[in-house]
Structure formats: structure tokens, C-alpha cells
Image (cartoon, rainbow, N blue to C red; front, side):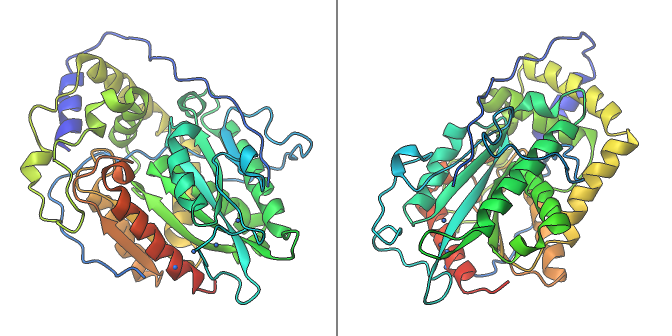
Length: 394
């Protein structure tokens, strides 16, 4: 909260317009042609520090435009790839046994006959495919193929206020559904698990889920779980959005994505909050100016009834209409973009609705940086969750 408050206070004194830095240009990658196991429900530690999460305005009504099967997604600015059966053509490399599973990993999906699992990795705002590759490799090593989807910043800030993105995500959802409806060459079923990053990935998941609930309910029973990394803040406010987009534009140069606390094992949840409030973490002049411009922009955009309605619908799907598959939330007190308190409140709401929810607080790792800070612990939590998913019938 302190970092964002400093931005707000400093921005009030600035009135000069300045152009936003151009976002990176991402190239499209075509879609091609997939199994998980116990976590304990951890007690929540009350957070006394507030931060700004950043949902962005994904519209949620399904798109009706057809998907070009001959060259899927060739015209999209979204970037995504699904690893094929051949290791050389996938987004990452992994070895296969004749039965299609890496040696030493029996994930237990599909009963005696078995099934294949694909993880759908939904990146944070401004992420590139290379950023998601290390996560794909976690799953590849366990016999799980991957599909990656990332969203460029410029697409979200476009003149259509997210409608074009919605259409493209709708086509992506249909491609995934069509592929999952088919079987492997050996007759095994195909299942899915989602792994989202930040509120951008989480809201993308909400748009996909809304599309499937409206037009492909047959695919819902093939989804085995969802992992939410640094996401699930449902607030709608100009300050929240401005802080998040500022972090996405400046990336590691932003004070909002920096943690002053030294990394420690996530089980030590008694981290000193004063470390997270280090006065040395101050926004630069450029960050203050960008934040000020974004704040003015979102004050206007979020007041538009159509934008608010579409975003509220997506959040409603995520809050009230998620199916009964297990949910895992990975978050941190040190996250300066998505507050731990918001994540914990959302988890409590899901538990109240009877959902099967698991969570882990890494304590000191920054926004979408939990795996880099704690690679072994992060991987262990994924393994535990996959075991849970493999034993659940949706």
C-alpha cells in the first residue's frame, strides 16, 4: 500500500503529459496438439499491509467468429503455443516413453486406462512466452504437455477497450475445447488443468471458463483443477488498475514489483512487515508520471457502464460460478501488486461456497516471482496439488 500511496501522492503534483513507453511486439505462434496428486488447508495470517491489485477489462461475452483451423491464430496479437507430441516442435523439450509418459511419473488420471493431461499456462500482463517456458518445463518433466497464452499490454489499452481481446480468447477457448474433445491415438482421454499468473491470467481464465460454460459444457468435466499464482484480487478501482499496468509497463524497473524482504522458506510466515515497507523502495519520477497518466485513464474507462458491466461479469463467473474442481492459490505478503489480504478474502469466499480450495503463502517473494524465489518449494506445492486433482472426479 505504501508504494502505491507514494505514487498517488507524488502524482498529484505532476500535470505534464508524457507518452507511454511502447510495449514489446510479440509474434503469434500457431496452436497444435497431455496427467496430476495432498495439500493442507493452511491457516491465514492477517496481513496489515495493503497493496494495489490489477484486474484488467476482459469482456466476457462469447465470440461467434469461426476459428481458422488451417492456420489457427495466425492473425492474433496474442501469443500462445501448445507443445506437440514431437519434442522438437514443442514450446519446451522433454523425453517420451513409447506410452507417451516420462519415465518415473504415474499421474493416475483416467483410472486403469490412463489419460493425458495438458496444462494451460495463462501469463501475466506483458509476459512473453520465454517467461512461461520454465513453468512449462515443470509440467513437461511430469508427462504433462503445455499450452501458453500471453497478453500484450497494447492490446488491453486499445481503442476497443478489450473487445478484440475477448474475441481472440474466445477463439483460443474453442481451439482448446475442440482439441480436448478428441482422444489420443491410443484411445486415451485428454484432460486439462489451468495455471494462471497475476490478475491478467486469472481474468483470462474467467473469460475462457465463461465461454466453455455457455457453449462447451462437455469440456468442463475434462478440467481437473486450477492454480492461481499471484492473482484473484477482484477489486475494481482506478488506483488498482493504474498500479498494475504501471508494473506491467515498467516490469522490474517498477517499485511495485520489488520486495525488500530477503527470501526465506514460505513456512516462516512471521516475516517482519517493516522489511516490506523499506523506505529505500521509492518510485522513480518516470514511474510517478506513468502512474498519474494511467490513473486518469482508468478513472475515465472504469466509469463507462459497458466496461464495468463486462468486467463485473467475468469476476462474477470466477467468484460464484467456478465448477467444483480443486483450486490452489499461491501468493505472498511481499506482493506489491496483488495484496495477500485480497487473495485470502477471495479464498474464504470460495470456501464458503463449498469449493475445494488450497493455498500457500510464500511470505517474501515478489509478484509472480514465487517460483524463482523458492523453486523447490514451488514445485513441491504443484506436485501435491496434482495428486489431489488426480483423485477428484468433477
